[in-house]
View 1 (cartoon, rainbow, N blue to C red):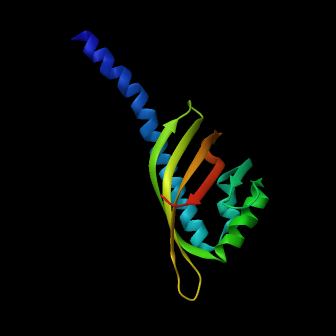
View 2: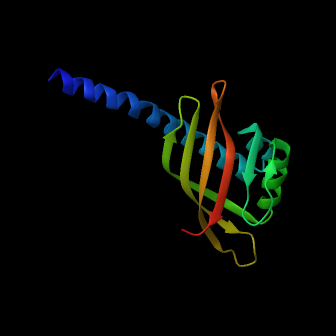
Length: 141
């Protein structure tokens, strides 16, 4: 009986941080959407680490907060109404995590189109805050 209790405690010790990380990351994703929809791209960029890199589809890598701010501002001219769904968060130790998810948005064409895709983000704990440090996405399932 004692070994079962120890096994349960062991499993919980690994599950609890993962659940906490997922909840924190989902809250930041909600903040990202709120800032994007308000047109606050400086705020969006503040959710990234200072040395973050984004990998937008079909274009060059984007390094650093100011470049990431400009990238999202430019993208917002073409798309809007973003939605994110976190599918999995895997802890990479106490100060890093990998998130896999899906996204949906609408183009700003005269006849808007739905765009869906998937993403992978590496998160890093900077002080007390989770920051996006690597962000890659593309269309499709």
